[in-house]
Image (tube, rainbow, N blue to C red):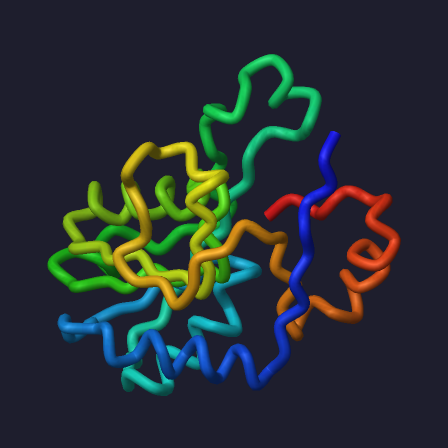
Length: 173
């Protein structure tokens, strides 16, 4: 089994990614939904840069490893936390996460936001088209394309041992 390449991103790198994203936005966003946990930091930075004041969070869980073996990667998500429909309805909503790997989490959030009557736009720092499960679907906005497992600066203290040792599984997000 091939080991995935890892890339450690610095705070300066994050600043450059945010600076690369902000000129891409052609829509004025009336709301933002940050996907926990990975979308909290980039979402906060983007909310400040774009002056978005209506900030919401969504938390999504997929079945544990044993359940995934039975159902595959296409298992139904469980929404642990999600904004009420009336907080989203008729708003251009920016959905933020750190990375689009398989795309399951952000796509689940996007679909639920759309069903609430909102106009969702997906945004990530890194897009991995090699792991994407959704064909040609991709984030509306992304700062970089990668084939690596990205370690962000806010993950270093809890994730560096896994990166260096490469012998522990990544926590699910």
